[in-house]
Image 1: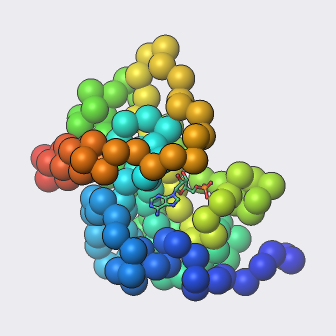
Image 2: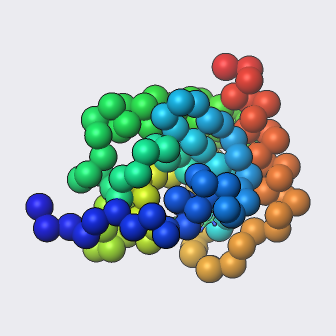
Length: 144
Ligand code: AMP
């Protein structure tokens, strides 16, 4: 398959290396989760493998399995933390597939009946609001 190689200068690689701050939610041996700073809904989280992979095409099946397991945890926690009616899980591959950051990630977005996702504005959400949402999610994760 003719897709570009992993670029370790991507913003999520910098977050994983601790070079850029994030609202951390969860970490285990193979995966890491934090809040999306431009959430499509309150509590919008991202789940990544720690190992470098650009997207679904070059990730090791073991990393993919670990990321899906963490995605399930985050989805269950988000149902509790945001009293959600459902969860949208999304994963984009390559630009044509909607991918903007080229380190594999799954979106976990809490949903409520009749409430549309927010449009992309390119603006970061209020950091205090994000910190509060991260705390809600961490508490719900602990309760699982
Ligand atoms: P995708 O289009 O699937 O590649 O999604 C990339 C996501 O990363 C978007 O939803 C952005 O809002 C989000 N994002 C970009 N930069 C950051 C950052 N520094 N911290 C957290 N989320 C980010």
